[in-house]
Length: 507
Image: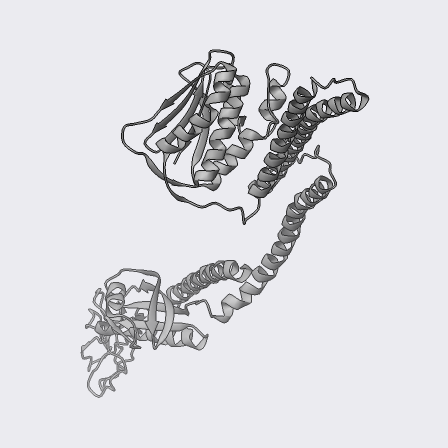
């Protein structure tokens, strides 16, 4: 990861430095060319002795000549018997030579006149400038620079793009453009020169990701990145490991029975989620164990009541307190309490068996109207004895569902039993069937709104209403809900139109 991050950084640094080096080389080369000596301007005087064969030496007149030639022009007279001088000026001057004596003859002066026209070969001044520039380019190459000289629009070395050559020859500049020159990737700087159509292009090797220049700069970035990664990794690991260690210690405390453990919720998000999960687990365990204790207390109470009755009657019988005439009544009481104990134990066993994977459930097609009618007929004598108004509501057409008829009848019996125990005299008890739905409604005291969400949790309602109204063992509704779910249906608690509780099973 460090190398991946450092590579483009090192590459960009190397490319930037290469461009700076090229620009510096270009400035040095241009300064070298501009400060090199220029071809000199012509300046001199024609001098030459004139000789004649008169009575005295002829004196060649001299006149200074100025022009744009590269050297002094030398003018001299040419009389009879004279030797011509060695220089020529661009054009004859106005000087005149005379020699005293009889044989004085005038001779034309060969000194340069005063004129602004260039000297002979001055038409080649541009050529001389170009020749000088080519020599300077050669000298620059000797210093190690990659140089291409452009003369009258033509490069002295081929390989550069033509549009770049034309641009520089026409007076334009090239600023750090990447080109391929002689099968090498180069960056180029181009500048025009004073003479028309001439220019110079300086080249520098382009830097790529595999260039030694990149690796020379990259190792420091790699080392720095690696060191930073190690430090950051250690700090991050320490920061992450600390809350995880705290969570592990909290889990060990919970496994030891401590339900008061709570972890602070702090970032990062993953650690905060872990802390919240452990806190929720501790709260759920505390609530569950509290309800379990309350359930065991309720079951103990339910077991103690019939046992106390049975023990009391047994002692009375053994002591002869109960007469022969009262013996049948005492026997019925003992039998009833024994049945109560049997139901309680059966419910506990069924509740435990529901947690097993091999709990038998056989789903078949069941007609709900027939099942609810049979249940009503079985419970009608007890409802009559309790003074309840038992009603059955079934549709005209059959309502078929796929369920376990034995388990469903067990659920209906639990719901009816709870209603019979809690309803006052004259209260309605309704068994209703609708398509895909079975309901048990009553006109009793009903449930509070907050009871609806916890109605099927074992022991909750029994603990709440134990001292308010007659309750059961606190197992029935929990057992009914688990049976319904095992059959693939749903059950919910609500408020009935008759004023009491409503329990709805949906298939």
